[in-house]
Amino acid sequence: MCFIFSFAYINFFLLWCKWYFALFGILSITYIYIRYIHKETFQTEIKIPYKYFFIIVGIILLWCILGGQGNLYYQSGDWWARNDIYKNMVMKDIPFTFGNDSFLCYYFGHWIVPMVLSKIMLFIGVSSSIVWKIGNIFLLAWTSIGIILSFLFMIAILKLNKIWKIMIALFIFIFLVA
Image (cartoon, rainbow, N blue to C red; front, side, top):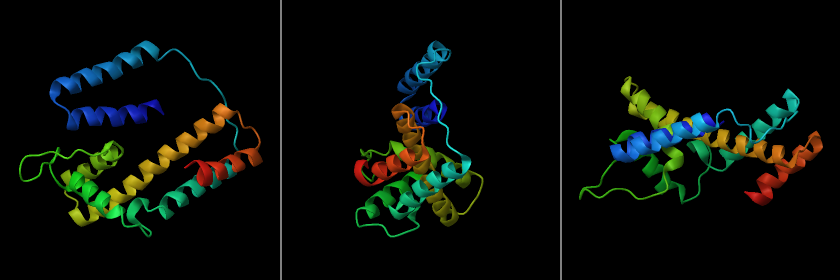
């Protein structure tokens, strides 16, 4: 799990930062791994039968789709600006500038990993219209993975061991917390 999030940070450092900030950030992540890789600070076991695990994943995935992720379902008006920013991140050179050499200042960190995967597809020659559609699927998958991992971490911390408690926690997680 830590590797996935570290990959996102390394992509951020490599693609968006000046080389000396990137070097410092990547060396910091490497140091943390080397220093703490053998320490187990959090150890617990979650026992969820496969059937219920896939039900939980399906519910979270459906929640993400109904929320507008992946551009597969209705999106409220505030999505249009975000879709344009993400599309610029995928289709244009990074970091992209505007006509007067000003840079975008926005909380786009969540989009970096799906953007990199989409740019790889552009690099190998996939058409831009297909890359845009698949890039939205990458974004949906990345968002879903983050929410699934967050939920599993929450039930591990709460030490929920009964499936009915886990399902109630999922209901609370979706409808009350998020």
